[in-house]
Length: 287
Ligand code: ATP
Ligand code: MG
Image (cartoon, rainbow, N blue to C red; front, side, top):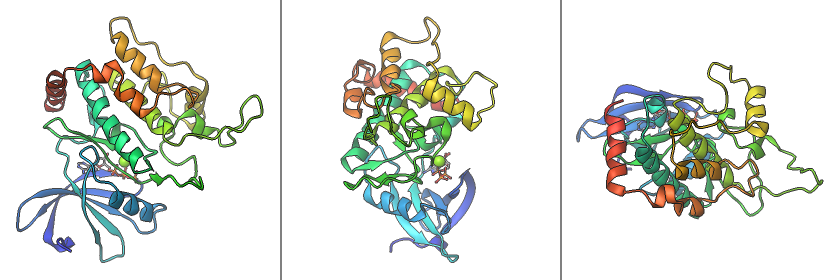
């Protein structure tokens, strides 16, 4: 291949997770900067993540330039560096609606692309959506993503961060009141995760639990499956934004809006592109 691991200098750690560590690296000869994600061989899903990143190529998905073997038998993904970091570092600093519309629009474009490749991300949350200082928004981290097969042999429903799991993913029996077994639309979980992300950026904190409540699994499951959506104070959001969030967060996945419907929603489709892009750049700059 074009790249070898020994051609890179490690500069700093960008993030750490279950799967491995992400380093900021520089290519010695060209001085170009990248993110290098080491995925430990023994980590469940390591092979799936490599398969999925090889399958996707879109302006709204973090690009993987190369998959490199390490001496210890792990895999290293050479990723494009997103110099604005992840959205979780922008929670709490105030997020104007125009900037929120830009995040939603670009993330939805990413989800529309994934759908065309039959990929479900399954871990949509602020830490897995990255931004550049130029105002680009891209989906990252395919650690528990899955290619939807016609056979419908899905991976374990409980993987991922409970706080961002959709109600139907807690309901593994998929048995409804009338005793009917409802087939789950696997793509609807990613719309839910995006809805929580938008609401979290708007409110400045995780929206489904009261500030200070411990996010135990039971508390989260209760809030997600049975709790009401938090009240957004008058004047804190436009009618379009309220409606957008509600459309993403229908507890019944059959009523939840699809990615295509959300791309046409006034909150996203009606935004002024120049204004919203500039607003997002300002949020990133002033973090
Ligand atoms: P897993 O969920 O499989 O355990 P992870 O959460 O450890 O994976 P990522 O989400 O891919 O791994 O990366 C962790 C963090 O590192 C991200 O939240 C982000 O802050 C940072 N990061 C990852 N990739 C990039 C990148 N390409 N550019 C800049 N920062 C990145
Ligand atoms: Mg992650």
